[in-house]
Image (cartoon, rainbow, N blue to C red):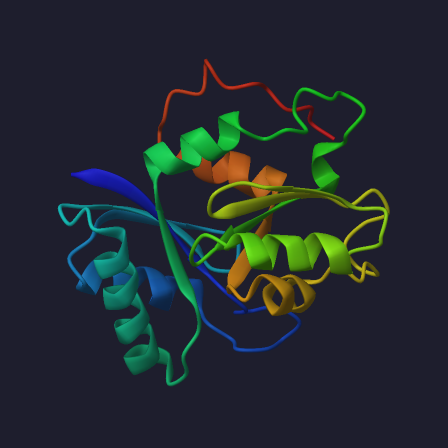
Length: 191
């Protein structure tokens, strides 16, 4: 069995697309996944599966989600190993002046092409710092995310790839939930 994380886009945010986490957990269990646990109300689940194809897992979960809840949303699946690598590659952790509470990881449904990356960087004029990795963006929001023009919609429009964001504290907790060894990962501050 391998460990995975499911990330749902745009559920239980601002009262929109309400989804009860116990029902979402039961849905994962009905799909045959083991050791299912959820974190927060915004669609983060950790589970084990014998299936290792991430696209197959995401499609299976997305189809069952629509059947269970009556609407569709983006479903992203990352392996525990991918999450650990993502954790280690965070460019802001080596910069102690960067508070982890202002770091957001945007998990992308696919890698952005060079044209999309260039479009995003050209269109962005704010104080935020952006680092584009393979299927993730690391963004530092020095003034908070609430009033920033660098929204998920803005990012998707320019990259032409959908995604969902999680703050660094959530990413850290999800990694802990996968029971990956984090001793060789940089330790973020507790801000």
